[in-house]
Each structure stands twice: as C-alpha cells, then as structure tokens.
Image (cartoon, rainbow, N blue to C red; front, side, top):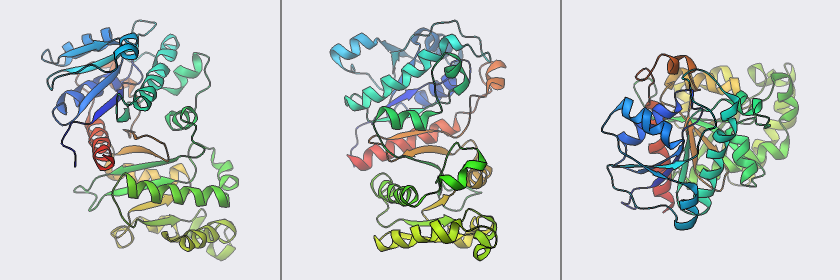
Length: 344
C-alpha cells in the first residue's frame, strides 16, 4: 500500500450551510493522513477558517494557475483551496440563488481535477438542490450530475457505515432506484437495469473495497417479498429472475428477502451489501444505526466519489460556528483515501 498522502478534492457545498465548516474542520484534522484540496470561495473559506481556528493555514490557488501549472506542492500543515468565487455575500442559514452557479462549478472543477490526475478522489459536502434550480439550472443531485458529466450510463447509490457499538460489522445499503416518487418505483425496476445494478455493486466492492467475493442480499419490493404473488408480482416477474441471472454469472447474490426482517444480525453478519429497491426502504435503517457517521458512495463511476450522509443543516449554520458535527465528513474522507490506496 502506498504511503503517500492521497490527494482528495473536497467540494464545500452550499456556502450558507454547514458544508464549508465541516470541510475545513475535517481537512485540518486529517491533513497528515491525506492531502485535502478544498473547492470553494477562497476569501470566504479564509474568513471562516480564522473563526474556527486561527491556526488553520490555507493556500489559495486560482483556476487559471491550476490549468497552467497543475496543483502546486503543499506541506502537511497547510490546506490548498482551489478558488471558485461566489457571486453574492454569504449569510449563514440563508440561501441565495445567485451563488447556485458557483456551487455547481465546484463539482465541475473537482471532476476535471481527477480526470487531469491533479486529485485522486472527490468528497462532496452537502449542497442545496433548490438553490441551483432557482439559479436556472436543472439539477437533481450529486449522483445524477456526476454520472452525466463522466458519461456514465448507470450508477448506483450506496450508503455505508463502519462497525460501531450499534453496528457490529460494516453495513452497506445500495439502492435499485434513488430519487423517485414512490408511485414510480415499481415501473422503474426492470430486468436489465437491476442486473446491471448488481454487476456494478459486485465490481466496486471488489475493486474499491477489496472484497474478493462479495455477498449481496436483495430485498423484495412488496410486503413479505410479495407473499408468492398475493401482494405483488415484481418479485416473481423481475427480482427473482434477475437474482438467478446474477448467480449464473458467478455473483454471490441471495434473495429476495422481506425488507422488514432482512435487517437483523442473522442475515447481515455474513453480508457485504444489501440492495434495497427504493430510497426509504433501506436508508432509514442505516441512518438510524449510524446517522452522522455514514458515507454516501457513488458506485459505477470512473472515479472515486464519497459524501456525507446528511444535508446542509441551515438551522445549525445560522446559529454560528461550532454547532456542526464533522463526523460524517471525516469518515467520508478516510473511506475515499482507503479506496485510493487500494487502487494504487
């Protein structure tokens, strides 16, 4: 394993939320383990850093200088900031659509930084989708945006947490569908899409998590996994045939299991990932067990991208510096660094 510090691009997210604060805190805390590169408004981050801890040292780099010279060297007691200037003054806790385009620009610069090999992975702080949409840009979320910008046909959202007092072993929950209204979920679960989802999960667990033969448990869509067709036929018509096809390809996939009983120790103790059929089927379980310490990972991308498991927390930001918990950002950064090491 390489002993060099992985270079991680960190987009600081919605400037009026807690993203800039938790990004600064986590970057400073982990600066000896990895090289953090913050993407945001350099002047605003410098002001905020001084308020958090006057000993935090930042080195601003313009995008023009980055394109001419690449990423400059940086010592272990300094954080690099790639300057993505905002268009309006930041008021903590108050959204301003004038800053929507600048927030989106941080994602573009982060993607370019990895593609140009200036950075090795991306970690994203939470942004506010409405601010970007209010700026006149159609935007549904980080996951979809990274897929579009990297030309990736299908990606998979997975949330993960490390073992803890409440979680005996690492827990990973992937989603067959993501941000869909519940009434659209059943129609979105199709054979090829679901089989590709399992292939992506299996491949990324092998390459990014170092699991040689991942064991994946699949939840049913309907109560009691359809009750042999009496409570719905999706398990019979789509999910079970997909599982059989995946097994035929050599994947260690089991199910479908009733979702209400799947998340218990006797099933999870030997599982590397659970595939839930929709957002609120699997994620409430993981977030209940690990909220504030979970990590959002986009599988299937040609780059490493992790994120925090929470939102912008405008209410906390409005109360001032010192109320936000950087725990999820710390775990997201460490997990991204571990993935980089595995791929070196």
